[in-house]
Length: 302
Image (cartoon, rainbow, N blue to C red; front, side, top):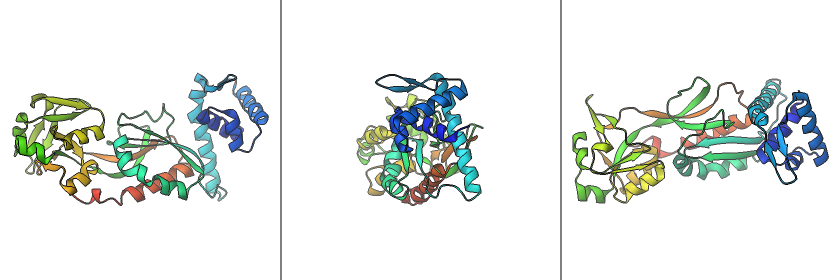
């Protein structure tokens, strides 16, 4: 199969513009159109819908796109094994991560990555509601959970320890709980749902963080908004240490029940589809994140 035509198709699918994709590969518009048409004839499927104003992926094109990316990655890996691969990582890398983590730890270091690897275009999807890697054709994702799918592989970035926090003003007004049983008299902020969370104590004992049993509920699906509400005295919330490290340091948030932590701890993983051969662009971005993010004091304090 013509891998250069596959590269053209992948670029056209990402840019939704055949001429722009061709320019990236040094091809004239007419040559680009002809090459894609030949690929579609070879496959016996229309990969792209074309009109005078726009280009869009067909259903067959959307299904074929991850396989096209995989074929290209396989070729890159084979050439690299022979010492004939590209010296510099290049191409579009689709990456997804929780928005709160991305704002604090990823967005600030992106200029450094772009400077190191100018040939890589980062296509980022940042949301606290996770995207499906396979359906979304993502190359890499950050997940704060254990690997739950056999179709994924990954590298651990750091532990994701979660603790209870509140503002000094809230605790002064409402009192400081000394045991999880005291939480029933407090306002508890819930993340995404109001399900009870089990807390692990210092001596093997357990307690509950149960918003339904607290004095009023507030449920949010955005981690940054929950932290802001907590900072402004809305109540007690569960937060990852990486999310509230700066506030714990400057005293604008207080670690509540410091001997207790969320029992079901998770970890931050950089994951990718198991079937994928790691292309150079994915490998360098993963190595970059592991190196830069781990420099934070958040992993060494509290």
